[in-house]
Length: 193
Image (cartoon, rainbow, N blue to C red; front, side, top):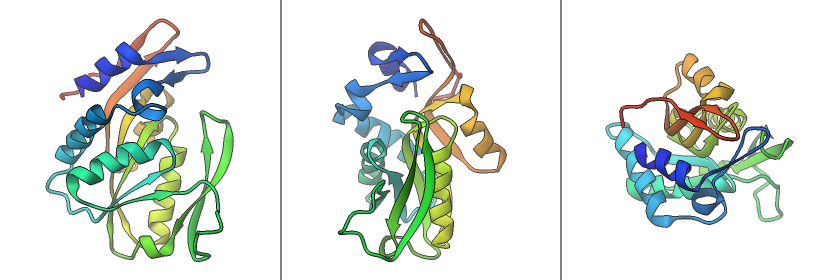
């Protein structure tokens, strides 16, 4: 998605440790019109697929997941990073490691929101090494549901998570894939869209 590449070049900031800050439009302040454009693009890529629900992870995945769900007129379920008192005790869970925060989280989805046989599209803001997405696929598997595919706003291709998922036969669609990142340059993987 050329629009995502342009947005990253214009508004993104690179920090040491391969951190890309896109807080001005994706994960601190939200550019709602742009996110709806992303939602339409992802929905278009998955048209023709039977999808029952969108699954994402809090917090930054929710905006992208919501945009896709709004276009497809589907519910979006997000994994919570904390087991709060208002969660049902009947939960699916998985441990995921956050690259950005360098910490492990146990994420939870209530069993009342995922069901056997459902076809799930997993959506997130970033894909780096794939820990969050693998955790969400684990939860989908625990529910005996099926992961139809994965869609992300930004993939850090140089960290290999997307390619590892693709090598397992999982469909992964990213709006922009960064193959190289330095303090002064971003190199995007060529895509048709």
